Image 1 (tube, helix red, strand yellow):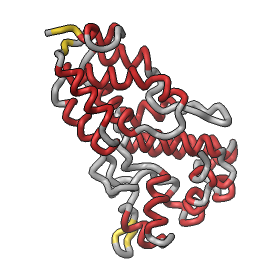
Image 2 (cartoon, rainbow, N blue to C red; image 1 turned 45 degrees about the vertical axis):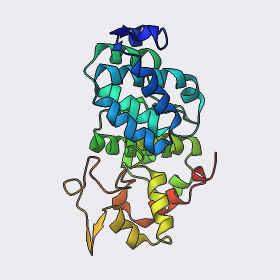
Image 3 (spheres, rainbow, N blue to C red; image 1 turned 90 degrees about the horizontal axis):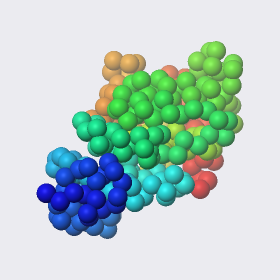
Length: 253
């Protein structure tokens, strides 16, 4: 085997991984295909073990500056991060800790809220705990009164800083392969002609006339319907989520 440092970058974690000249072609293919195809490529690379991990580390290593400064969620980077995160490899763990200690989503906040605990839960795919923490962070955004009552008035949601909502949404998007997030729910809502009843059914919040029971009837993994999570204070009725769907965060760059 040839060491990765002879083919890729000189990052020590990547250089420690066994690879082969085939890795160059695998990386080139990953970088040139459309995003949807990238997600399939990354799934295939995960099955290759150390060779695939080396390719994915180099893929992320080459994008690190853009990921830190970028504003658009990068689903391929998110999936690559997920593969490396769950790999039982000290080299992968060292690489992520060195270059992406807070993940691949910039944790921007207008009010200096710490979103790193949410990033860790989503990286672990602990969607139920992440959903609960998302509500806590939204209450923190709303202020002390909301934190005390543990739910949010729709008027408070209207005042959320756009950058914080975009951060929350990006975290859910990149750690679900684009399946979960407020922007996904909004896209589905718009596709129904802003019909709430159709939305509830499509995202699995309602079955016929029966509301999905919290928490046991919700699906806390990626087998859930698209847009199923986060719940966005679902039990508080339409006005809260309506405020989120109408928020200017989704039309701002």
